[in-house]
Length: 88
Image 1 (cartoon, rainbow, N blue to C red):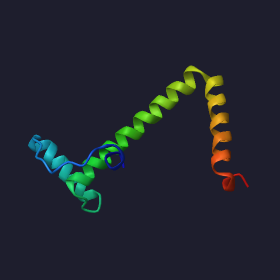
Image 2: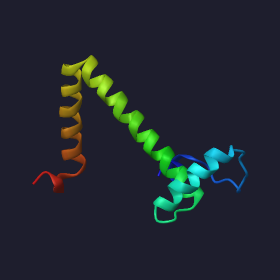
Image 3: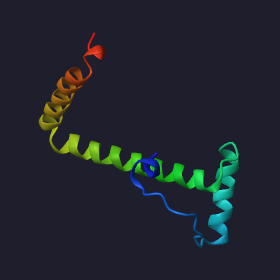
């Protein structure tokens, strides 16, 4: 997800990791329907990205509850404007 949207295409490369990390990644890959190591790493990066987004949203909501509500209302109005078919 993140890599497809934001990273520029690059050729394959090699990264050095410890045997322990390699073995842990292989185990995770096997538990994800035998996903490739690349797919597993991409999944982990995406999950970390989503987790950080949620943390930031939680922080913003707690720091300014009224501003958060105003932002939600504005987003709702914008969504209805951009996607009137969903407003029904």
